[in-house]
Amino acid sequence: MQLQVSRFESLGDAFHTRLHPSPLPAPHWVGWSAEAAAALGLPTEPPQDDELLQQLSGNRVADRVTPIASVYSGHQFGHWAGQLGDGRALLLGDLISPQGRQEVQLKGAGRTPYSRGGDGRAVLRSSIREFLCSEAMHALGIPTTRALCVTGSPAPVRREEVETAAVVTRLAPSFIRFGHFEHFSHNGHHAELRRLADFVIDQFYPECRAADGNPYAALLAAVTRRSAELVAQWQAVGFCHGVLNTDNMSILGLTLDYGPFQFLDGFDPGHVCNHSDSSGRYAYARQPNIVYWNLFCLGQALLPLLDDSQQALDALEPYKALFPAALQRRMNAKLGLDDPRAGDAELTEELLQLLSRERTDYTIFWRRLSLAQAASEADTRQADQGASPLPQGPHWQPVRDLFLQPTAFDDWWARWRQRLQPSAGLGAGPQASARMLRANPRVVLRNHLGEVAIRQAQAGDLSTLQRLQAALARPYDEHPDSADLADFPPDWAAAISISCSS
Ligand code: AMP
Ligand code: MG
Image (cartoon, rainbow, N blue to C red; front, side, top):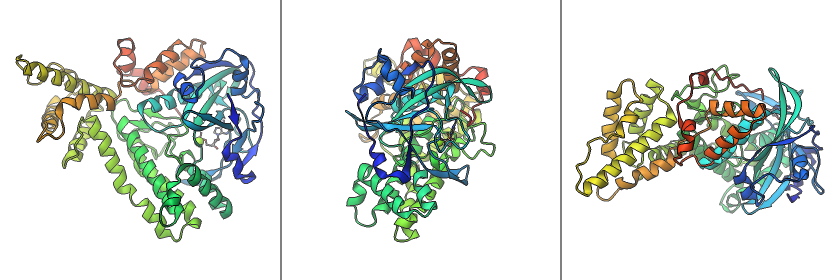
């Protein structure tokens, strides 16, 4: 892997500390993402030679590489937390790939000046979760940091109990967070704040410079747009981030820092996936408001670069329309609708209330709805060829069977089917199922699936992890071999408790 000195490093000493990773004994490969590797132009299997394994476990540093830990601050759980920083992450350098320049970061590679009493390590459990989920999100089409690999070591790491250490190699065009801006702004370091904002604009948002008016206001507006799109995708797929602090918000609108995240099983808008979040601040349904709150913090941090505070408010204001519009677009895709119409929001809301009342399994509901539509389209095609059409079709039953009180669902179903009817050449019904099957994944990384893969990996068996990884890489495909991964969660899934500690 040919790394170059990171462009982030050029920002200067105020932004980071140079240091080497702390070695880990007896590293071994735990996971390797063929898809991430291919995107980087690397082999799709972990290389046989020891050199890369040692480098990505933090035991050797390649020539010309100066690893750095960056400093940032942030708001955690609604309160100013002061200085944080890469307490266990090290940026190795940039890789020039066919997909553009990617930063390569080791997470769990040892203590840094920003570890604040932490051990600088990540355990195998949380490293596998981040590895699987970031690659799964990418396969779902949701903006995210990616993961090339996980390496494990027998080195003990103390959490609630003693576990073993691991390192995830993460990839992103940039790991810059809202918290980086908050750091310099809060400390009154306005020259550094401007340098950071100029860096982000020049590298990632050049259109903000070209726009009329203040480029930093344009940056805030652009980040607002990307964040609204991101959280709309999370809501549509049923993803809870779990720790939406401002230091976990990517300036590029990527899903960042996978901790106690969860994909919903039964649909519960109030679901809190983080055991440490006692007030439910980061409940599933609150995520859109929290992202807005976080954008507000970013706006506040950028004030020294803006003409006045009204400019920040003007840049943030569109979120209130952008988020619902982005969400409705995603929900319409899930419903097979391609021509937005008045009444779509109500149709969606009534459905979500139904799912919420019954705690219907979110992923299975959408998939069965898509399959019911596909079957109904097949019936219609047969009817066109002379066979008698079935009014609902036998495939209606599996989705209806999800409800204890199916009459409310029947009512909704009838209205949805009515809405799907093509009218005046709009909203071509026959392709609705194709849209739905691309918008409603069959397999997502449910907590219990990760848990089983982790337990086996902890016992030295990586086959379940690899099988799950393969299914998550093709989340929209039907495949008989992975039927169990698309099934309901077992009863014990509800008892899984994931906290910030990882
Ligand atoms: P997180 O909640 O994972 O986003 O982390 C919040 C802050 O705590 C960041 O500054 C992390 O780098 C730091 N941190 C989390 N875990 C550790 C650890 N085991 N050792 C050192 N720093 C950590
Ligand atoms: Mg974090």
